[in-house]
Structures are given as C-alpha cells and as structure tokens.
Length: 195
Image (cartoon, rainbow, N blue to C red; front, side):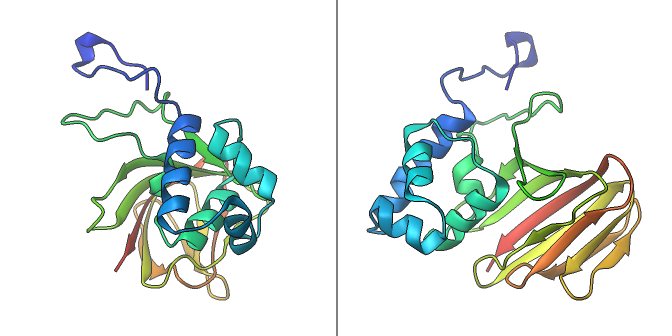
C-alpha cells in the first residue's frame, strides 16, 4: 500500500503480499501439525508449491490459496490480509489482487474479520470468458455479493443468477459456486463469512 504521512497512514514497506502469505502459511501449517508434504497432499497442490510459498518466492493463484486454506480449515484472508492498524486505507490503484489461473478473475481482500467473526470483505473484478468456478469452502461458509458494475452470473454452480448493478445475492459458499462476467470490467463486493 503506497501512502504518505499526509494520508495519515504509514506504510510497512517490508510487509509485501508474498511475505504475508509465507508467514501465515508456515504459522497455520505448523498450528495444524502438518509437514509441507502432508499439507500439499491434503490441498492437492505440489510440495514444491507449498515450499515456494513458505519461502516468499511463489506467486499463487486464487485456486491454490483457496485449496490450501480449505485444507487448513482457515479463511482465505489469513494469507493475504495486512496486519491490523487503527486506520487502514486501501487505495484502489494499490490493492494487491490474487488472480485465478483458469478464469479472467481477480480477488482483492479489503478487510478480514476478527478471528472469532470470520468474515472477509473483497472486491472482485472479472472479464467475460471462462467463469470462475469455486470448489466448496469450509463448512458453514456463506457468501454475499453486491454487483457494482457490469453483469454477471453468480451463485450455486448449477443455478447461477444473473445480477445487474446494485443487485444483492446470498448463497452457500460451502457448495460449488460460480462467478461469470458478461461485460468487461465487471466488479462486485463479496463478503465471505464462516459460522
């Protein structure tokens, strides 16, 4: 996040997305009592991928981080959220996004809920093309979407609903679901909560 003293927020230049992912991944893997190979097997990713991410050298896709988060039974935001501060500003041009590997889709974490609340706030941006198909997240996950611009099919994989700007939808995130943009630069606000 690039800010200045005039913005009232001081940046932490050493805290990049890669270092946040590395630090959180090692912490959560060790907390779960798993080795690198065990986590890789549970998440369905290569052992080398987990090792690279823990060293801060990897560039993971949305799918990889979701698979690891699901295997560890933690929210996606554990890996990408910046440390909490009293005042937190995320400039649109500076927010770090995580791209999907199989669809023209990016997720930008704006805020993660407290550990006991387990709700995260994202901005999604997608382009027409392959839909973003999500595997089920941890049990008890509900997703809330408000479409900001464009047009998109959103919701359960077998029954998506076409949303227009201003439309809101809630659906189970612990079942397969989809986000498919029908217009360029389709954007949405997503809140993912786990109960």
